[in-house]
Length: 402
Image (cartoon, rainbow, N blue to C red):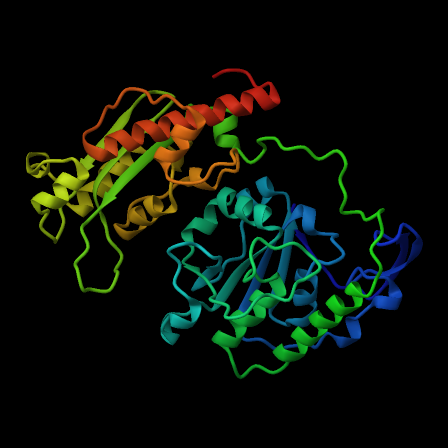
């Protein structure tokens, strides 16, 4: 069952994670009573609906900022639960909902035309790793348009580790987005001031060796490997697509796929389609794709592709692609997108890079190539990577073979 966070102004006696002592703690901001800053949090009548999906492990973190956002914004909702429950829940998305997440292909929110901006923002709350897990494992999030921020100064969340200097806390990201969507709204700067008060108060607290954040039993394993891969490969469909050629001197526009290949690992069923394009496939472009004009003589229309692709997919299928851009290709042509995992986001190795570089670094041996061109080569490598992840998950958890 999804939990909706409520803000009841009460306190309780708990063990203090800062110094190991026992003291009364505010149950709203989760700070010791002498450091409570609830009175500094304004009440803001925001127009844009804010829906925060919070990772379960963030719920009681004393420095979590989603609780502050929920307390401040009149038009907001905070849902917290385990990832698998959020993935199957009927999430309260409104019309024109959008996901605030720094996806590679996501437009900057301030660059979006006013008429096309979201009326509801869905915001992910958790550590960077937890956020990636939620976005990856909640299928409905992939259906939302994605927007990102372009902060021009470092975030001020100095009491928690961030992946880079420009990363923002949930509160900072929410305020920045609302300043774009509704700059006339009063109280946003006051909310940031309350946030800064929390930070300054915490920085003044002496650090001690008994900090709750020290986990002596933590070890690196491969729990980030998606369950659809670690438990069974019967309904994992690995796919790869080639996009149409861009036009020199023109702004980057959404491109549809011109060639799409896929394989269902459990049954070995395969899908292949050359797709008609409104741009001619020049010889240099085809050479780049390692394809020939002959292979496009029977190319299907976009409508035919969508029909064939939907017929190929089964209700139990999960899509696996190496890069998010492959999912975007499907969206650009209106193709069906089922549950999807982006292999590049799986944290299983210290190596980073292209699919080819990961395959080489991990010593993974690719299987036979069943499709033409560069797409066929990359699909074979992606299938090999999925099998490799499955083997790693088995080794970690003692899971049985398929």
